[in-house]
Each structure stands twice: as structure tokens, then as C-alpha cells.
Image 1 (cartoon, one colour):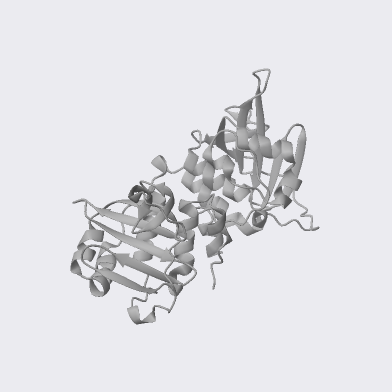
Image 2 (cartoon, helix red, strand yellow):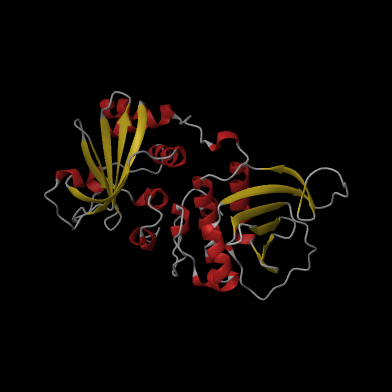
Length: 334
């Protein structure tokens, strides 16, 4: 269940068939073949190319004829147009085969939807077409209503994930609090990496991320991060991702005994640069093949085992670079 909740914040899904890439970054997320077969190519295309998406809170039992309604249901609230961050999380849920049961069991439930996630786009006649995904949390079933067709499936496995995502949609500003437990972080880093490093991380300003190819060389130093070739870069992590890295740094499972580093060539897959408010920084490089990570700055260089936090680091990596096939192929367990 914990891994399903984390699915809301990260896009670490092993997917096989490619969806269309027309407009937004989130449409690049790939669809599992089972999902494409179930929804149909036309529906997947519409999901990718929608002009806007909103969420409606429904009261399916209301007989009140006054007030606003969506489809035949009374609405009690509607969201703003979803942001790209919210859509990225939604697409990662919708396009994963793990979000569906795909079994032969049919629930004997009356459709009483609590929410509708609605995709809107203008057709060639400039008329508004709609795809509505009705969510019924009484039966844990979702109904895909589009082009005069309704398809339904169970979402038992991602029920909590959907609820967390819905709460985030209706949270003002959709920002994650930066109220990290800095005392815990400071104590851990100070004891293991030194006081100056602890002070630097405690005064965090921004975090940059670097997708690396350690086997590729370049004479262009602007394409290198600590000597390793940079495939892609995120100059500034979003609040959600930044909080993830701070949560990792205060993880009690961290083992920082450098003697535990293996006899393995250090070939990092991803790197992070944590900038302090005074512009100084600490770099973290992670090599998943060896299960080692390196913390380095002008005061300290420590390489050690990261097996105990491999899963958390991989979740952060795949959320930061959700389209990278290699990262998605890495197993959380080794």
C-alpha cells in the first residue's frame, strides 16, 4: 500500500507501448498495452491531447433540482484546471496496468460516483468533446465515459492513491510544506558528514537534478557533473521532489560507514546538487548497480552503501526523470 501511495508523487511505472506525444510533457508517459487495449486508441489519444482537465465533486444521492449539475449528478465543488504536475501524476496512474484489476469478477454495485475527472478538447468543428472518468468509492470502480461508450473496471489497488491525489487537487496552491524536521537532518548529517555540510544542507535553498550516463565521455565540461556526462537536467526541483530528498536525508535507515562500500566501479545514474542560501552546495551521486552513493563538497567526500534507502532514492530518481526508460527498468530491490 505504501508503494501505491508513493505512485502519486512519482512516475516509476514499467510501461511498454507508446502513447501519442502531441502537446504536454505528461502525454509522453507510456501506456501499458493492457490499458491501451482496454480503453482503446481513440480514448488514449483524447486523454493525451485534451485542452484542459477538471475534477468535479458529485453528490449522486441528491434529488435537489437546484444548483449546478455535471452529467446527471449534482455537483458540490469543482477544481481549477489541473496543473501539469497534477496531470503528470494522473497520467501515471491511468496508464499503469497495476491500477486495474482486469479480472473476470463483476461487482454487483449501482453506479453512485463521488467524483468525475473530466477531459475537455475542441473537435474539428470547434465543439467541445468530453471524456469523463467517474469514480465510485463505494464500489472502488471507475467508469470511462467517452464517445457514447462506457467502460468500467476496478481500482481497488490504487484506491488510496486516488484519494491522496484528489486531496492534493483541492488543496490550495498545491504546494508541499517545506517544514522539514531540520533538527533530525542536521543531527544525522553533522554526525556522519561534518558540521559544515550539515549547516549547508540545513540552509537549503534549491535542489538541481542530473540524469547521468557514466560510460559516455565529453570534453565539454558544461556537459559534466562531477566528471560524469549529463544526459538531462532539472535546474530546480518542484516542492514535492525537494521534500522527497529531504525526507531521504533524515531516514533513520541510512548507513554511512564508508567501509561498507563495495569493490565496485562507481558509475552513478543520477546526481543532485543541494544549494544553500549562501550559494554553496553539496552534491549527491547515486549508483544503483553498486548500491553506493557519494556525498561530496569542498569539505567532505564520503562514499558508502545505500541499500537501505535504495527504494526511496529510486522513487525520487524516477519521479524527477519519469520518461527515462533505464531508470524505470531498475528494480527497487536488489
